[in-house]
Image 1: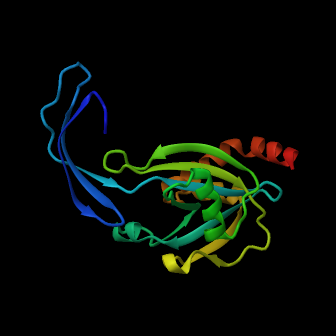
Image 2: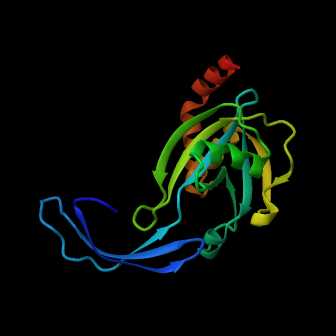
Length: 203
């Protein structure tokens, strides 16, 4: 947090595991040019960078999506299993595109032929450092396996191919309850025809 308009008074790390929790005491410059008082402690969850990739087959106008258990939404009283796009964390030395290609094979058994960057966004900037880079990857949706994921990561993933129009309806009907899927499918709804023309023309 090296910024001339932020002064760090103190930083502690009370927990470091899969997630890291840092506690900051700080103040920042206000819009009128003056400074705030020292703010109450601010907890920040440092989870690292992540990638999401929407797997799209333009030949069949089909998206490949996955379903898996999610303890966070279950704990909040929401769905325990969620329909999602492929996603994963960026490891040391990896680029976001490399992660997109790796996770597509690990979670859905799909090799990406062409890839296009959609956006990057902060999941919950008030408390999380996590930034997600979202891609759309061209795949062949035929002959998919029923399940995917890595056993050593305790993944139990259902793989499904859905008509693009059905995936878009799921978003409109609030049946996709996670941000990266909503962002990716919303992008596809706006860019689907131009994407098909571009990729089918190239293929």
